[in-house]
Length: 275
Image (cartoon, rainbow, N blue to C red; front, side, top):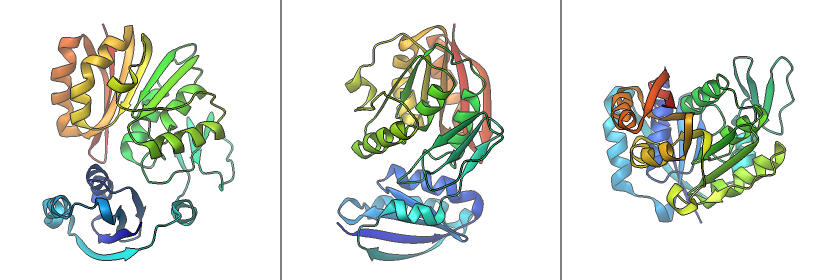
C-alpha cells in the first residue's frame, strides 16, 4: 500500500505538537528533519479534511509550509537507523536502538527499535513519564501500562524492580512492536490488544501508567482509580499544560491527589496518589 508523504517546514518548537496532532488523525510514521518533520500516512486511510484542519490551526503560529508526495511502503527501521539518535533522562536511563552502542554512566538502559517517533523517549510526554517513574519505588510492585505503544514505560517499570508488569494497546502494530522490544529488554510479559475495557486488567495495581491523550484519560480516569491500591500512584501524560486543571477536576472526586506536575515543550505530566 502506498504512503502519502508530507514534508512540513515549521518552527522547531511546534514539531512535537504537530507530530501528536497528526498521529491523532491517522499518520503512523514521522521523521524529524533540520527544517521540520516528514509525516507519512497510508493513502487509503488519509483524511484530507482533518489534515487541513490541523495544518490551518497551526499555519500562522508555526509558519508552516509543506510539500506533498507519494511513495511506496517504507522500511521504517532502515529510515530510523538514519535519523534516530539515543536519548538520556538525567542519569536514570539511556534509551537507544539496537544499532547504537551502549553508554556507561546510567543506572539503566533501554533498547527500543521503534517504527514511529512516539515511545522512544524523544517525545516530551514519554521523557517526563520516564523521569517521574524514576521518582517512585517500583520494587516488588504491580504495574499497569495503559496504551503501552513501544512498551518503553513497561520496560522502565521492569528495570526499576516491579514484580509484575501488564501492558496493552489498541493498535496491533504497537502490540507486535512492543513485544519485540520486551524481548530485547528481557521481559517475559506479552502485550495485550484492546482498550482497557476490552482487556479488563485485574487489579489492584500499585502503579498505573497512562500516556495517551486528554479525552481518553478523562474517559478512563475512574477505571484507573478503581484499579489502584490505596496509596497507589497514577502517572499521566499526553496532554497540554493548559489541560492540567481539566484532568484534576475529574481526578479529585475519585480520591486522586496531585503530588507533582511537570511540563516540557507545553506537554504536561502528573503524579497522582490514591488517598
